Length: 138
Image 1 (tube, rainbow, N blue to C red):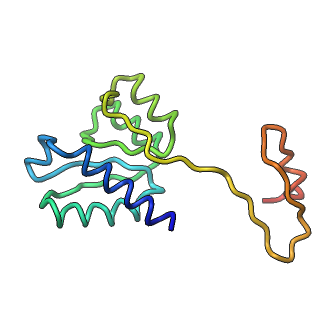
Image 2 (cartoon, rainbow, N blue to C red):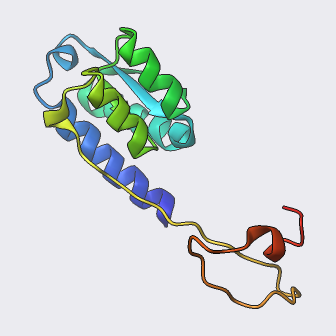
Image 3 (cartoon, rainbow, N blue to C red):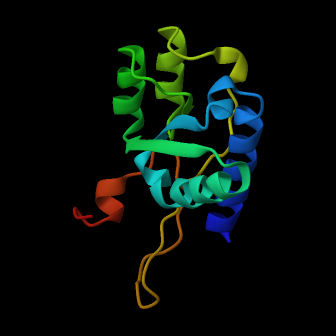
């Protein structure tokens, strides 16, 4: 369900952002996206190419790596970061057009345990003692 929702939102955003974009008119657009979005973005790019006859050239890496590459002049038409701080970094360096910035998604940390676990439910906050909760492990 979450993957389908991500594809829908990212696909709609890709279409919205690219609409009227000069590079899309040339038949190619370069997307820099967080590595965690690889599968979803590859699916979206394939659909976009089929529907719009525009090649989507994708580069996947950590948001920090991509932000630094864009700052150094890498030719990205669209930057999809998984980290607000690195999008802020790119904006502060004037490496992106801040008038086109959109926050698409967010996430939350979720902790699960096996059914047979004796772990009791707990609240996650800035005082959570992770070492104790994980018995010193992972």
